[in-house]
Image (cartoon, rainbow, N blue to C red; front, side, top):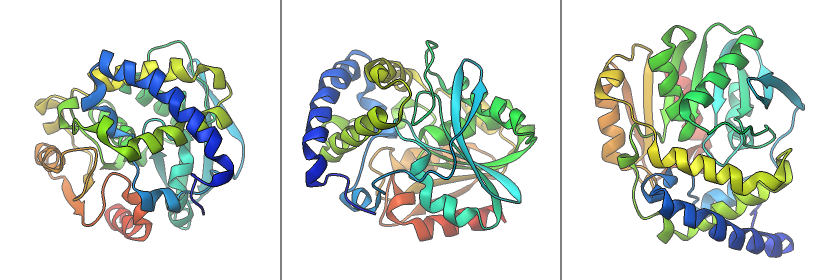
Length: 299
């Protein structure tokens, strides 16, 4: 475990950061993403030091899904749980949860399309497209029903599946998720740790992606999605029947806490937990407490 902004890699990260500004910020303003990009792009300094220098690799496994190749890992055994990371990240962000949950569950950790080791197609990225990818992967793995732990974009995908395909789900945990772009705080470009995360995200993409030259194209597609999605109606949320835990941090940097609380109120019989002294990256900052909450809900 180590600080990714170490001296030996500083030059590379500064270069990547400058590139990120030239590529991302024009897109942010062009697509009015200031209100939505925080869904996936903030880091606390304590989180940075907790992040592993390299993502854990247990096996290089890929599945052809639609028009992309998805990287995935399967760990442990028992009732399945699908881990869906946030935008611009990858399955390595779940390392503490994989190690813990694999003792009792069949853990499926995936790099979503365009992220990590998975490939990117020419289709515009959308939450519906990402959700369909996960459904097809579950079919290939012969998993008819699963739990989902989703963070940020992953939490939104979990809600999308709960609305569209409730029979495929046992329970869902939507952590740090919003139901509409208006639920996101608007001060992303003022946050220094956002720039640190962009640096890391850029470096990870260049190191892990099978198509590293498509970084700017990937950013353009995903920021356009963040500008316009999600847009769950109150009726859609009220019709969710899957047991749902809406999880957030009281010091949430990305999503308004009031929005998270309101989201829970709109989902019948959902459970709301707001973790104290943490925010959008609680699974890295407070992994033991985070895992305890997840396990308690899955029982």
